[in-house]
Amino acid sequence: MFLRPSYFIIGERKCGTSSLFRYLVKHPNVLPGLLKEPNFFGKGTDFVTEHIDRYWSIFPPLKNDGDLSFEWPELNKEGVLYHEEVLVPRDSETHYITGEASANTFYEVAPELLFQHLPDIKLIVLIREPVERAFSHHRMYKRFMEEGRSGFDVTDFESDCRQEMHLISKGGTGTFLSPGIYLNQLKKWSAAYPKNQLKVITTNELDQQPQLVLNQLSDYLEIPHYEYGDFLNQRFNQAPSAVIDLDIKKELQNFYKPFNQELSEFLGKELTWDNF
Image 1 (tube, rainbow, N blue to C red):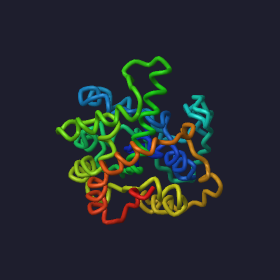
Image 2 (image 1 turned 45 degrees about the horizontal axis):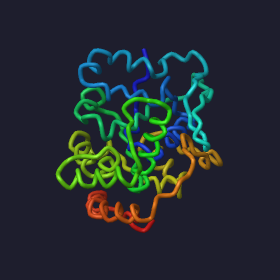
Image 3 (image 1 turned 90 degrees about the vertical axis):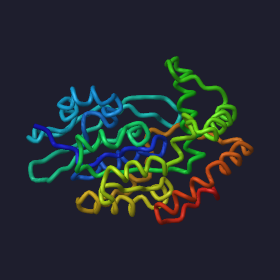
């Protein structure tokens, strides 16, 4: 028997989900699973139905068999992938919760599929200024292509984005730009899950007031507040910094502006992304 997940960071990709996950599992009442990003529900309805018991088994056992140890892939500031050993203490007197962070879920998984198997889960969505998010997403795919992985054919950021803006204007979708039109997906998840099971956080909020955000998440997940200290200064799975060309940056800001305004109204809070 295994702990059932209490929370799920469903995305979005390149918005800081790796860091948020690592902050959460630092909490003394939170245990990680064997994989921080299993991407289980992205494998399709038939696979999920046939292998759901395998999914439960990635989470910690109900029985306390001592501390948990893992090896997780991380990307350092130089862009080099490595495996980090993680040791998580566990005792018999503490009430624990667990969860995961498959960041592709928000955009790629049907909310109804997740609800079928996890109707009581607390969902967490991180959203980042969409131009920066698209740029980071494109750089990740370019890195994958240079590593020789298949299915990641990209050209330069400007050309790919202009092609996608044209596709979207004709009713299509784009690999890098469409995930940043957050409202489309939020409406689907809001229709599938009750309001008290969907929490949206901006990357700006996490960067600027991380302890406040983690306190809010503790309340949301019904666990005690915890003082993380300097641990919240760390960033995980962070690629080397780069700068977007100013011309395409302005084009994309204008492209996203009406979508961001609608999103701001839907969330009921001001977004300052057009001023970044």
